[in-house]
Amino acid sequence: MKLAWVVVAVAAAAQQPPAKTAEEWSDHGAQLARAGTIDQAIAAYHTALKLNPRLVPVYLNLGIAYFRAGRYAEAEKPLRRFLGEHGGNAQARHLLGLSLLEQEKFAAAIPELEAARRAPGADASMLVALGVAYARTGRPEEAEKAVEGLARELGGSAEAHLLLGIAHARGKEHEKAIEELEAARRQNPQLPWVHKWLAQTMMSLTREPEAVSLYREELKLNPRDAEANYQLGAILERRGEDVEAETLLSTAIRSRPDNGDACYTLGKLYQRQGKLKSALPLLERAVRLLPENTSAHYQIGQLYRRLGRQAEAKQHFQVVERLQQTQREKDRQAILPLVKNPAIDLD
Image (cartoon, rainbow, N blue to C red):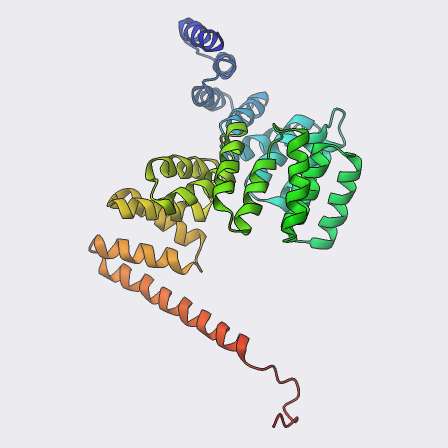
């Protein structure tokens, strides 16, 4: 029934008189968004803004459409443009915070989510997003204090268990993490992120089959989650399950174009399949994003060699040798005794 409604809605939108003004294109975009044709809605909003860049509300609608499409990096710019004139809009702040969070810009996400939290109507999902941002900032003491405070605020809810589970997972306390995350899942099996974090914890314990099932559960709830798509895609690529891996990795890159690991993994898959033209831009992007990744330089060196671009291949193989030499030196230093006072005779 829902599908039939969407078809009717799209048909009705198509039968409307051709849009001419910016306002008409904006309305057309809204109709398309309500019908679920998000990519077409995005195109309509862009046309509206091209005709009238001062039509500020369209920036919010464009940001929402990009967010719904899982294109978080692209959502950021129109949301910031809208907030430049409507800085107190809680919905825009919330969406901007979530878009930054999905891009792993955790420190930047915190002030946006804090601002949205102070607005009326902030709910448990807002507090979870804020807690995740704090947990991922790389400042352990500050993060622990913030997460514990948010967990107390959430009481004994599923969201509270999720936050505590994430904190334990970040601290490599795997058994405690599993206990909290399983408690969250029992209370609310539809809770976003809980299956993903359980899967990541299982991977840390080399329990891959369980992790695969959990990633699949997460993607049922949140099909465009960049991390879940990448992690499951990487597992399947290692297994040689290329068709599904390609879909997952492509979705991860669409959601996060700066995910160097996803670009590398999909590029490697294409090179293994002999699709050299498809592999090239992905591996080139991977080495830009991951300049210290030995495997990425090796893969693109191999690709350039296969394409007959020997000079470029040589450059990347030289980088591989340099990185390997640096790692060997680090390993050597790690096993040498630390002599704090050279005057002491160790014999």
